[in-house]
Length: 47
Image 1 (tube, one colour):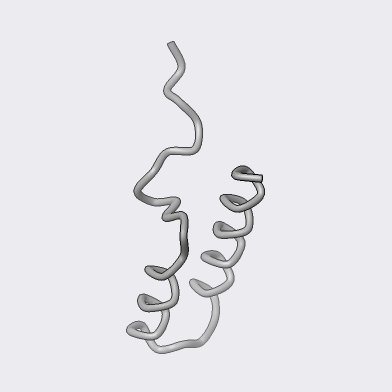
Image 2 (cartoon, rainbow, N blue to C red):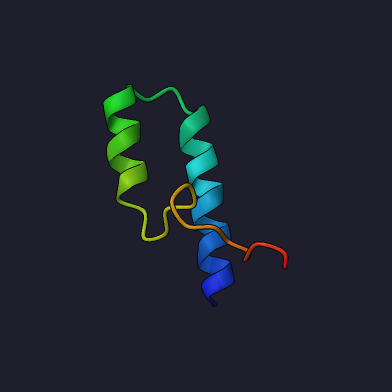
């Protein structure tokens, strides 16, 4: 379920980056997502 949420958030993030919304509105929408893909790595670093 967590992987699905991360994937869904990335999809929404991508859509809103491409959408013609004002920058402030995009920021508010993207910052309200439950998973911030830019701040948390999805996969651990290879050992």
